[in-house]
Amino acid sequence: MKQKQPIVVAVSGASGSAYTIRLLQVLLRSGCNVELIVSEAARQVLRQESESEFPSDLHDDQQWRSLICANPLNVIPGVAPIEAEQLSGSLAVHSLRDFSAGIASGSYQTRGMVVCPCSTGTLAALATGTSTNLIHRAADVHLKERRKLILVPRETPVSRVTLSNMLTVTDAGAVVLPAMPGFYHQPQSIADLVDFVVARICDQLRVDHQLSRRWGSQDG
Image (tube, rainbow, N blue to C red):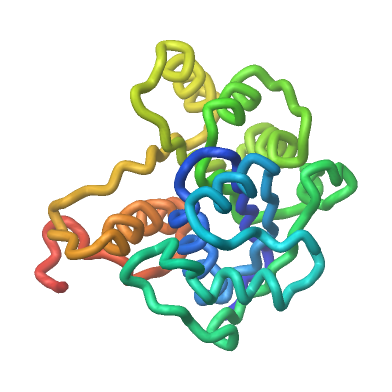
């Protein structure tokens, strides 16, 4: 069943394209409506981590869905390509500079937002309220409207400045969910590790999934 209110997914310039692609696969296969923002740095990261790119045409739905389905150059090793027909949710892609987008306003209703991965620069912008692009503005909106905002940093080691910024955004209402896969489910592939993190994101968004075995479960 499709959800009327969309989930905002933002991609900033930290390593972790596999998390991004897998999250989009899961949300769209679950029938979620997704509003996507991709930074220029995120485009560079995907080029570095695979032999593919985010489409330049923001409105070419077929190209975007093909990228999400194809798992280019095994961005997620162990996950086979999927059929476009399986992505039952809708996808809208916004320019990083388009402040006229609905998600730039608190009057536009959403189910929540996730920045995956979240660079330390994006984290700093949110902690200090220096909104200079649509990712920052949409996240600011979710904070002020007291809606779910999930930030997925992928950085190590972490400086005192970054730790302070994490505490600041947490105090403001965000959920800091570092890309730290667990091992109690006995992962057999990189795909299992990716799914562990994506599963935690989906839990926060209240999106049903069967991505990984839960602690105490006898299944899987």
